[in-house]
Length: 261
Ligand SMILES: Nc1ncnc2c1ncn2[C@@H]1O[C@H](COP(=O)(O)OP(=O)(O)OP(=O)(O)O)[C@@H](O)[C@H]1O
Ligand SMILES: [Mg+2]
Image 1 (tube, protein in one colour):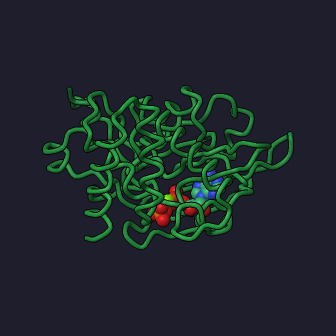
Image 2 (cartoon, helix red, strand yellow; image 1 turned 120 degrees about the vertical axis):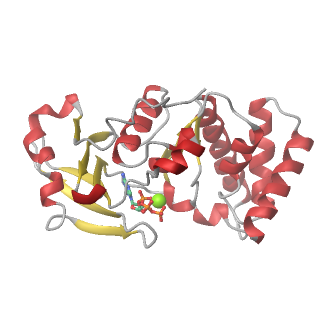
């Protein structure tokens, strides 16, 4: 089944504004985000491939300031021909981020709360989009856990076990994140457990019919280490009720292909 079945064809390039109804008290400031993006905030990241950028922006509200992470998209990442060939890849950018964030939050999967989303049609088919969500402070650097070197065996297993379970829950909702790299996973250590949140939601797809290639494709980027991948694969297979030997064999193959090319 086509996910968007053409319904975005007419509306996609129209100007689009969404404000989270829980934040109507600060809607004036939120509506100014696109206009003020250039001059306000602290630059966190610029993506050299699609020129999108992320800024930390403070917004005043009655209950004190709110820190937002605002991502500005320069391209719609929407190519009609490509969409005709791959219908599920139609809608990307600010609006897509908001749609996925709402699905995740309804399912109890962590992602920073979305506050606003905008899309503007510019002359000659150009595009500009903004997605604003809460800035999430993190207290746990999980990068070493996804690498080859690790020292704390117990913490390593606990983190990766919980991580695999979170990915399983994400897939259970039919959401596949195809850019599960270290920088797109924000982790907080809370008591004995971990709060694992996903960002960069424009790399997510909602799938109704899930094939094995979707699962493998969304797992392989997590770590370059085959050892770590195998551990995550075993945990994931356990939750999914898959044959662990067969699954990790296929995952290892897909992982090798991804990291060698
Ligand atoms: N809500 C947020 N809370 C805290 N930090 C954030 C948030 N959103 C983005 N960041 C920071 O900004 C960085 C870039 O954000 P994001 O991944 O959305 O952009 P990107 O251009 O897709 O990056 P990349 O292509 O490298 O994954 C993140 O790695 C993270 O450090
Ligand atoms: Mg990212």
